[in-house]
Image (cartoon, rainbow, N blue to C red):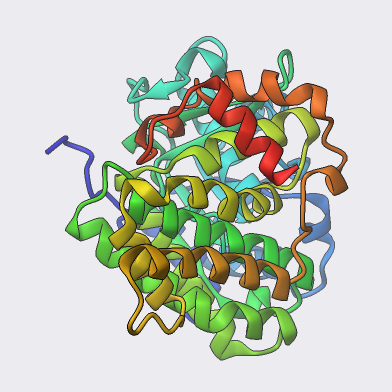
Length: 385
């Protein structure tokens, strides 16, 4: 077992009102001045997560400043601008407020604050030599799992290619999932982030690096998402569905943090880098097409997924039951308004070979349960096109 296997943040707070512990936890971590990493929209919401973090920090006597220029699919330029604020203001900790973009940006700022050179120099697995500043991740979406993972995904603005820095040093010290901060989330964002979490759970479950520990987390995540995403999408104020989606996202994050992912993410990263497509949307469109191709690698696991997603597989052969899982993925995506194909999102067919080439170089490709080549990945892009 590698030294970083099964690591999760030291403390995870879950439930209504959990955001109120930010100040107390910042004090426990020894923070004096925090850099709050978020975006302008979240910062502008009256009474929202950012304002609640401010109130909690003031009550604990922790000073803070903002970097609020986080972009979707965060870029290396965001980290460069953010670390300047961190150093100029003599901050000693980072508090990320938002979804995966804020969390990954905060991690990247922490990396640049403690390591020389450029972010892309550290692309890969366990390349970080120094501890990062303490990070508290306050989650406002139920999907990416970045608040509990060692992954930091950044877009290289010189190449428009996403790269991943995977290290146990990236793990936030504290993660907070408060469903009350998610009540006003737009339905489309609820759908995209929820399908992102489902993709994490399914890819982790069928990954060639899966094991009984990661399977347990992935299974429960698949069940929770299948039973709650439609409800959270239909009525954002449904706190039961929101909280269950928080649990699902966290469990899926724990699963892929150790079992890794597959071709869905490897391909989605190219769509995010080249087209700035929302990550959850890219995953959701690709998921059923890629997993249909993966089915023969482990039909029994896909039959299991069908059952976890509520399909009746009684009396079916393993292969027929496995196909039911693909049907369930298509149906859930359709029910929550995910676009049907890549063409509708402005993807150009002439870019497919280029994206396929880079997808096979993506770190997530190596744990996919079926090995493919460039032609296979192009065909998978075409099937979703």
